[in-house]
Length: 135
Length: 132
Image 1 (cartoon, rainbow over the protein chains, first blue to last red):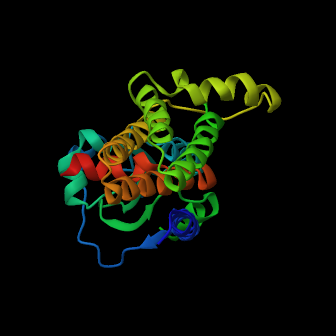
Image 2: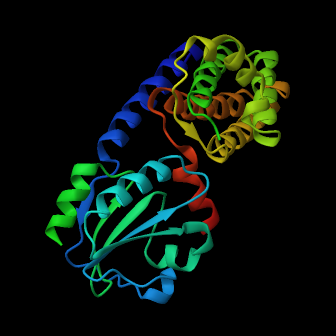
């Protein structure tokens, strides 16, 4: 294969990957049978009265900032729901147990701390609202 | 905090330079990119040559109203780029062309994703790295 063809192939692959990733990123997926339950001491914070939105972030992550501002501005309208952000790097045991692979990853926990939904990547505002309405 | 358009502009320029390197197999071109990545990774993206070009020629023509971002995500991306460019440079200087081609192609893939989609490499790779 000549080198110009390699350049074209790499750019096409990257474009395809970028389009798929953009479509997938931030989708909130319900976890009906999740076995993950999180206790307050694991995240260094009390759980919310009706639900907790648990965001895993890292320093090397630009979208974590926009996720934080979307989540906190939406959750401000729900007094019984709490937004907790934890640094993934400082909580590696929890990261491994919950199988968090990238940041931002956001877990939606019910009042008992059980994971009921998860978003990998930056979730969209309207998706966050509909997820909170379902809790 | 830096102008978040700067790293994307640098990634675009990086994509062009890496494409030229792949096509010409020129050690000089890949070394230019290696130096860019090295300064960005170890002295910080704002001190790199592409950032200087951005501030000198591009930023004055753009809106003054911009999103700022933490310097650490682009610095991490520059470090990942540095590793690939280093492998590519070794490949070019020793004429082990498969090494040169694969390393340069990987760097081009990441740089193009960053410039065209604002893709955050640190978000996907960093945590996997520290989880090991």
